[in-house]
Length: 291
Image (tube, rainbow, N blue to C red; front, side):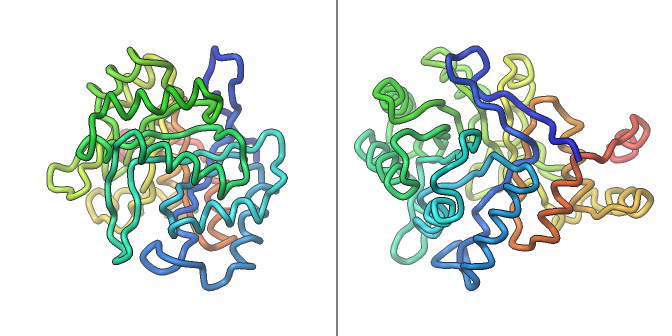
């Protein structure tokens, strides 16, 4: 299996080379993304297996757990290999009642960055995604300016956006260099769902990312529980002798040269299958069949 690579921060003094697919850590926590995993040793083994298989891009956040996935990554990998990329995000925290609470004031953003640094045992974060959630609890531009300020201070290497729409991406690119965009996107979820309580942005920014060669990182990319369109996905997966999850990843990788999927799993078997999905080729007629 040959890992495809994507450059994050191309044209900067310190670009990062990410192998695809990456790995999303959100599911490694306890139930409802809260607390410690039931099998901590098993999780550490899974993370180390991912690294053995060539994965070097791990997505995390200090509100996963909270604080759980950051510490798992540190336990599994510290001191970190030179080419390991840990991406985190800011703009959300967890309440004591397990609620998801958006924030965006400069002092809150700074506190989260410092918290991520401490939990990950780092002096600089490789990549920080500034979340859309911050827009409802503070001025979006003011919050992003704080992130760029911390980049100039050396706390952050590269700045990205999360849940961003095209207007926000255009605004952000006028303020500084945007290294990546992390949005909800999958075979069954390609554009913003107006009914979503989270206001997730879909793939509307993907054309802009292609134009400016900005890596696009889809989360919740294995939406196999969503019935819309999955009948064709299942038919083609059966025909090719692969799983629906693998075909979902392959479909993503065929949408753009700048897509970096981060499928998460708690199973080493599924992890290995997900990584093998990068080798699946889809013909034009197969892509047309999927629609």
